[in-house]
Length: 98
Image (cartoon, rainbow, N blue to C red; front, side):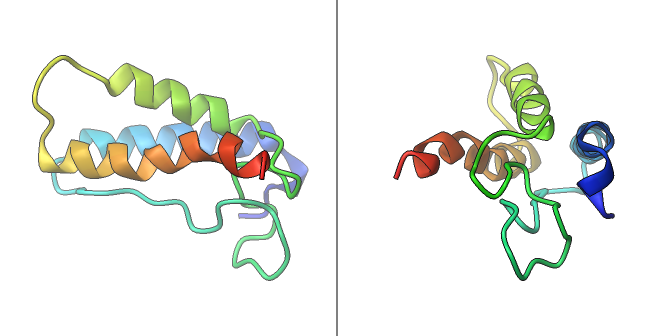
């Protein structure tokens, strides 16, 4: 997908795909190919933050999903792996301050 035309479309797609994968027990993890927008990527403009690490609409949408999945119970392996993949999102603000 080429997301340059619509951050809203990227955010809706990301939320839908992560929600779908989270709902299926045969998915153990979900990843994001190119974390930020910078040259040489497989998906042009497919990152969660812009090249300067400012957040796109997808970032808060996926963080909201992560928060909604934080339940007071032991996570399954699939849930644990999904949460670990989404934990990368929480590191973006730290990386942008370097």
